[in-house]
Amino acid sequence: MALTLHVDGARWRAAQDAAIAANPGLVPVVKGNGYGFGREVLYAEANRLRVTMIAVGTYAEVPGALAGFSGDVLVMEPFRAAIHAATQAATQAGLPSVDDGRLVHTITTRVDLDGLLAANPAARTVVEGLTSMGRFGAPAARVGDLVAAGRGEGVTLHLPLGSGHVDEISRFVEAVGGIRPFFVSHTTADEVAALRRRFPEHRFAARVGTDLWLADRAAYEMRSHVLDVRPLAKGDRVGYRQRPQAAGHLVVVSGGTSHGVAMESPASAATARSRAVAVAEGMLEAVHRVRSPFTVSGTMPRFAEPPHMQCSLLALPEGVAPPSVGDTVPVRMRLTTAYPDAVVIE
Ligand SMILES: *Cc1c(COP(=O)(O)O)cnc(C)c1O
Image (cartoon, rainbow, N blue to C red; front, side):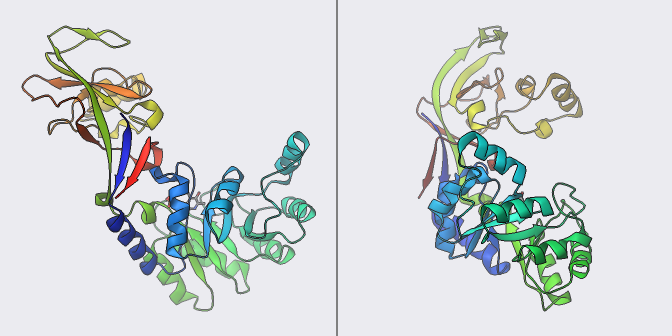
């Protein structure tokens, strides 16, 4: 009675191996919901891949990463001395594991570098450059000084989606000077190869999550249990909202908002009008107007009403053979917002 992510282990691992082979030096990103697999599963995969470093999103993820993965752990959010100090005042502990020699901190300002070195004089650092992404980073002209001041191990660059990455990264490489590794994000294997040709004396390593863990969509499938099936006469009312239904069957399936069901944008709504309605009503309110992500008896029925926390009510149209209680049905979900109850690697 669960939403379960089924993984074809051999196929999934072959896709990971291919991604690493195509992009040597790749640093796996393990963050957030662990791309639907959970972070613990991905630490184990990173160990299997024998990579020397993974990248995590936040300091909150550091203790788990150090426990689950045996190599270096790069924290992609910048170290902030003020937050470390405030956390220390509140908990006597500060940000997690700042002392650990396997941790590599991201630095964007001198104040933060000084604060980090005060907490741990041996702290390892990389310096993030401010790209057109505009999220975190030091301006290109300051990156070299920050690297030198912190005996930095490299420079990190996070690029927006789209093209033009090679030129933007090239400008940084030239502005920073010196020879050091560049860790680049959202840069394809082809772009990294082009950078290596242009700057053969530098090392480039891509930080990759989606194109590593979710490279082969056929390697995994989300499945839900059919929990109940009931005939509906036209006008029958069901659910919290007591909406009248068309004739057919009500199918109750496992998987709701707590699993991330219907948490994606309604871009899949069939028509411009239904998309406009979705925007006007809010995503969750409008989901009954779009097809649900559950495939039941070969169709994708509509939600009878917005999904509940752990299950969903689907309206199967008249003429479609209903499933049986206990059947499993596939669910199409974006894994970066999915929280399955279980992950089964077979
Ligand atoms: C999340 C993140 C990545 C990985 O992104 P994917 O699209 O999953 O490959 C890389 N770099 C940074 C800085 C990130 O925040």
